Image 1 (cartoon, rainbow, N blue to C red):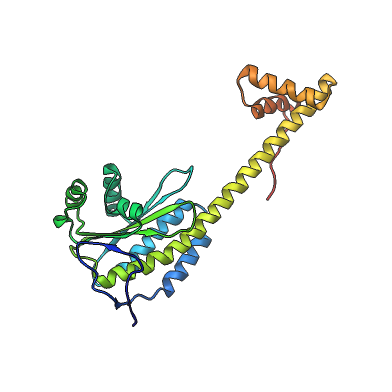
Image 2: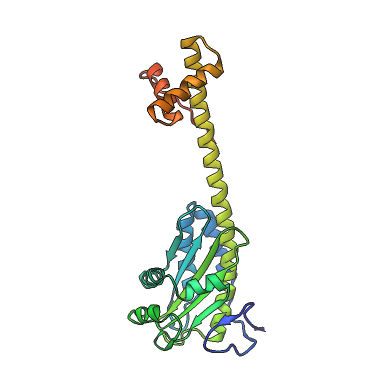
Length: 264
């Protein structure tokens, strides 16, 4: 085993002693991450499985670890996934106070360590609420995604002092590896959204063009004039242009089904 230390500052009441042994093997973890990327089309499903996978990887020697993953994206709802009910409850408590180890780690970009929730001066309101649960210690890691999104991993142990210095190092390596997979999953989701938006735009354009053609035939007018008629109807009725166009097509088509869908 090699000796090393975390790549970033550990915000903890206990000073990090320096290089410690690295005893985590990531081979199986990486293989499982690859499976998650292939199997999960939805980012929330991926996050749920990622949280469970991280918790399983870091649970050892009878020290059960719960994991929560929070992702913040531009123009998207905050995505939160948890490995179990304990992590879910603690994440909900922290979000209700709008402060705590997780949010501090996200804000300061540092590893945040709470060795004992019963003896912690930071975030007193959250700590009182956390102490009422079955949690003993907390560890939070910001994830480096190299994108417009931000993410943080929350780790919870039912033991006080449940994260040794070796555990902190192992957890950093695990979450850093998970961050690479999450970055790729977010890119895939972004591309999927772009494709869906483009498909919807093309379908809408086709519907409008078809309706314009019908108006041209009915009124024996130019394309520009037909389009203005459609726009005026949309404005006068306060209905979206596409909906007005669909109504025109439906009136002409009757029982016949006209599709504007694009095949992938």
